[in-house]
View 1 (tube, rainbow, N blue to C red):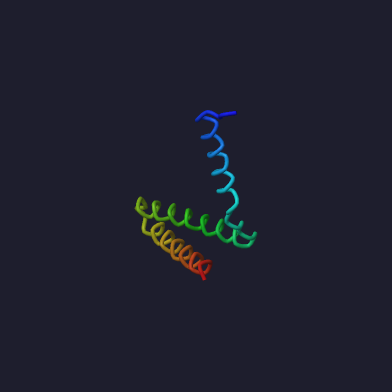
View 2 (cartoon, rainbow, N blue to C red):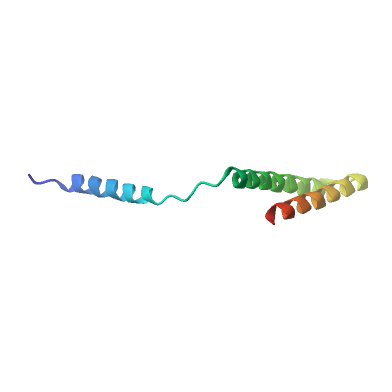
Amino acid sequence: MARGFQSKSVEAQQEASADRGLIKPPLPTADVAARRAERATLALARTRAQADLKNATVAAHRTMLGQAIADLDRRIAALDK
């Protein structure tokens, strides 16, 4: 029995989808995932501190934010090793 164009297209799409599903990248280990999450958190904290520094007007606050940014940079660098 002859099949129509649509059924061939659907079948081809299903096969292509199945082929793409065979090659999946390996999931990161728990340690790698935790390091990525911590790095993302530190990067967000640094971005926030940088924005706060831009708007800070009191010298003591600017100093504190500069120290916080330096500490965040140190911690990010330690994670990247």
